[in-house]
Amino acid sequence: MHLLLLLQWLRVHYLAYSASPHVSFDIFLLLLFVVMETSGFISRADLFLSLSPRSPSLQFEAAWALTNIASGTSAQTQAVVKSNAVPLFLRLLHSPHQNVCEQAVWALGNIIGDGPQCRDYVISLGVVKPLLSFISPSIPITFLRNVTWVIVNLCRNKDPPPPMETVQEVGVSGPDYMLLCFKSILVDTVWALSYLTDGGNEQIQMVIDSGVVPFLVPLLSHQEVKVQTAALRAVGNIVTGTDEQTQVVLNCDVLLHFPNLLSHPKEKINKEAVWFLSNITAGNQQQVQAVIDAGLIPMIIHQLAKGDFGTQKEAAWAISNLTISGRKDQVEFLVEHNVIPPFCSLLSVKDSQVVQVVLDGLKNILIMAGQEASTIAEIIEECGGLEKIEQLQQHENEDIYKLAFEIIDQYFSGDIFDEDPNLIPETTQGGTFNFDPASNMQTKKFNF
Image (cartoon, rainbow, N blue to C red; front, side):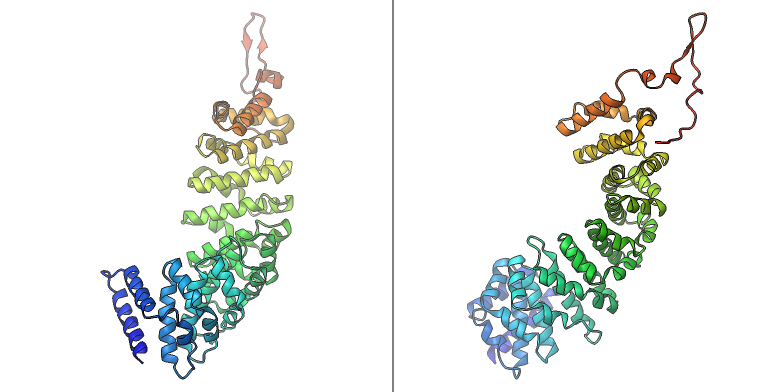
């Protein structure tokens, strides 16, 4: 009885103090830990949690205290785990008293969130099935929000990722969550799916097999930016997989959402959208064509020219990937939409990876151009790209200066008149030159 009163007193004062800006949560948590440790409560947690349902008040107060201790430092969380509290929290998930059950869910979420070791320990004791049993419209939204948060913690850490059985169990529940459509849990639900799809092709396939992709794709146009962001990351992770996995997303008309995403006022959305498309342009030629047919290439080029640097970087990848994966006519489409000037502008940035990506892309365009390479070289020179490439021959990165040298050597060395005899000026009888700049300088048309 004395312990019950003490726990109630601590909880009431915690709630009062937590509302005050003058009281540090860390200090109060430390005080709670010291009181519980010195009283022997933590070491005897199994006793208080295993009390019969006739003492639900004490069960709740004990669970509340341990929940808050488990939210502290890793050492404090481990103290709760070592007290053998986890199996008893799992037992409390079946309590007929909802407040006790919900407090147990919260405690388990804090323990799982400590890291992969605690996560796998709780999973090994069978936490997933009872958690997923709470997915129901009859469950109060506050309770369901806590359940969703715990599931997010189960999926979050990928070093190492959760067991494949867990991925499969959680993935299968995805459509059930989507159908609930509560805004307050939708964001966490979609983030959980994004974590699951961030663990390699096998995990991606499990999520696809759950049937959740058709529910995910429409969320790209959700009115809440947080939902859009989470959905964009989830589908973006899926298209990092195989061409077949990518096609599953494309078959849901995903590209219809991208004009709005690429013109979104939030720069982070722009960046994630271009990142998504860079994985599509790395796919097969049919997938590259889908991006072209959706009218997205001019928008990618706009982001290449005008976006924040992070977005420009993703756009550079999108363009360079297309020059590798695409057909000649698809690469020609890039050039016709004036990709080269903004592409060359990135040759002067400090990010070596971006510079190399751009050089690779330019070289691929020149190779693909064949007999039209001199025309491409002329565009590169006119927009200041040649000067930048020449400077890159002095770059500290060996791969970059070698690539720059190769481009100069193959496409810019020697007299340009050797490449195109039409540009050689005619000699008049008086020995002067008659150069007609209009003879070969019309609007450039490309036929690779």
